[in-house]
Length: 232
Image (cartoon, rainbow, N blue to C red; front, top):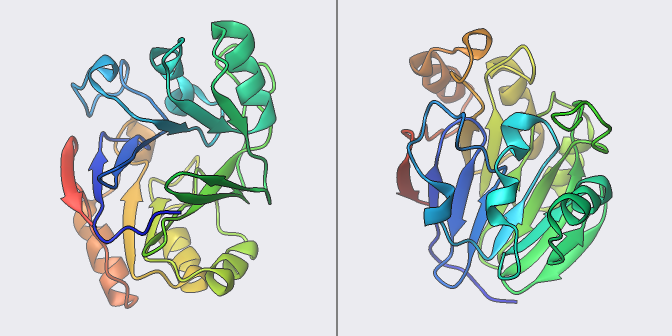
C-alpha cells in the first residue's frame, strides 16, 4: 500500500468528484452529460478506478463512458458491477458490498452503509446504496454517499482517523445541513467537503449558510467551486 502526503480533489458538481494522489486517479459517481455544473467531457478523464455508490441516474448515468477493454476498474455493489458486465461487457470490475474491504494499489476501500434507496434508471433494483472509506496510508477519506445520518457513522469515526468527510447537504433526497453536521459529530473528521446540492430546484442551498453552520458547530468546511481542483 502506498502512503500519500498530498492529494487533489476536483469537484464536477452534484456528487461527482475525482481524487488524484499523484500515482492514482479515482473517480466517484460519474454524472456528466446531464450535470448542469460541469462542461467536462468524461472522455477527457483517465481514472484508474471508478467507484459508484448506488444506481440512481445522477450517480450512474455516465458509467458507460468508462467501460471497454482498456477501461478502469469499477468498484461497486454486486448488483451494479453485474449490470455493468451484462450491459457493457466490461470485465474490469470489483464487487464491494457494505462491510467488505478490498486492497487496491493506492490503499484500502471499505464499503459502508448509507440510508438511501437505489434503482437503475430503468427502475430495476440497484442493490443497497452505500459509501466508501478510503485509507490511502497518510490520509483517510470517507465519502458517505447519499445518506441520512445513522448511528454506524460513529463506528466509522472510532475505527478510522478521518481526514476528509465528503457528505451531501442538499436535503430532501439526502440529509441536509443539520444532518451533515450530526454526521460530522459522529465521524469527527478534520475537514468536511459538502456535495449533492444546487443541481435541482428541490436541493438548492445557501452556501454561506453551509459555511456558517459548520463553522458554528466547530468543523472546518471547504466548499469547492464546480470544476475546480483543490489540494487536501
